[in-house]
Image (tube, rainbow, N blue to C red; front, side, top):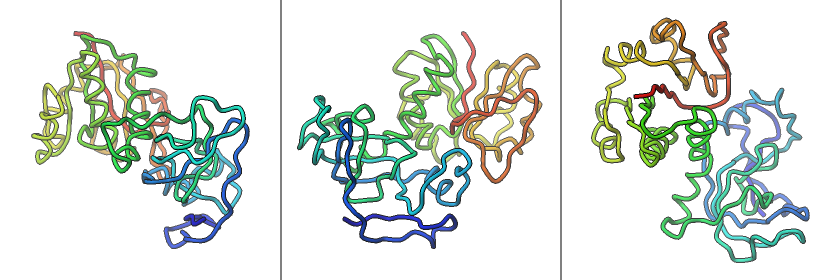
Amino acid sequence: MKAIRIHQYGSNDNLRYEDVPLPEISTDDVLVKVYYAGVNPVDWKIREGYLQALIPYDLPFTLGWDVSGVVEAVGENVSNFKVGDEVYSRPDIARNGTYAEYVAIKNTELAFKPNTIDHAHAAGLPLAGLTAYQALFDIAKLEAGQSILIHAASGGVGSLAVQMAKIVGAHVIGTASAKNRDFLLEIGVDEFIDYQSKTLKRLFLMLMWSLIPWVAILKRNLWGSLKREGCWFLLLSNPRQKKQQNSISMLSFSLLILMQNN
């Protein structure tokens, strides 16, 4: 089969489109024929070697961790999927990825593709969708009646977070550039803020919890803008620049969320 792999860390010049063996599946794996593969920021971070200290990849290695496709074969212990099922997934980031014609995925990392969307759209959902869900509900414990500020709300993660927050009954404030105002109102934000306005910094002073996307955001004079008893949660920091402060918690995510009870 064909796959896009790296044989060494570095720029996108290191990507190679080449013939590779068909993945072998374990007893708990599913072999998926890739219809569409998503591309995400974590792909280039791995390609450039920023995560090699956390995950010791054996090169050559196939990138890509968003996929939608059809089940081609199943391991002997797999009973929840069968050949021909349409599925999508955010596979294990430590295994060879989805820039390939076929990918082996553990059955617990697969879900049936919704009938309401095609493979192209389904391939863009798993990683961004899980990121939004985990931040909102696993970390922030968002509930009905809470107000939440979602920074970069028009982006992949942000736009999904907006819709999830509305489903549970939260009051959603979203920031983006002025050109994306109508889009955010269409998907459900209750209040829109142009991120270039002074309103954003004033709002920080009213809120207790903050999840920050990129270190670059912190350059916008926001370090001292949260309440003294408040807390920043920095998620998915830029690997090229890391900053530690006692009041900062470094996690791994790409969304800004601020919450307070109404």
